[in-house]
Length: 68
Image 1 (tube, rainbow, N blue to C red):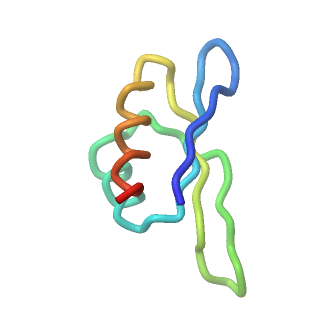
Image 2: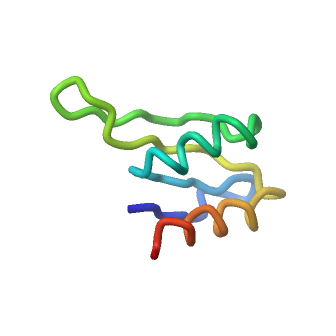
Image 3: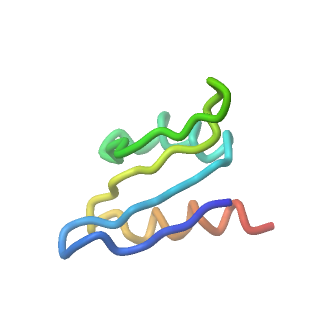
């Protein structure tokens, strides 16, 4: 599951549970800041990122990757 929503006038939020998307963000998008990490029984299940408004399009495209 991957979702994107508007945080304020400068940022969007992106939440993902996809390991593939987490790897892509770590590798290609250094300006996506981690807001929160979600764990279940000490295992990472999701990460929430703070995305600059200029990367809005990238965030929505990453969200579509998971909707297959």
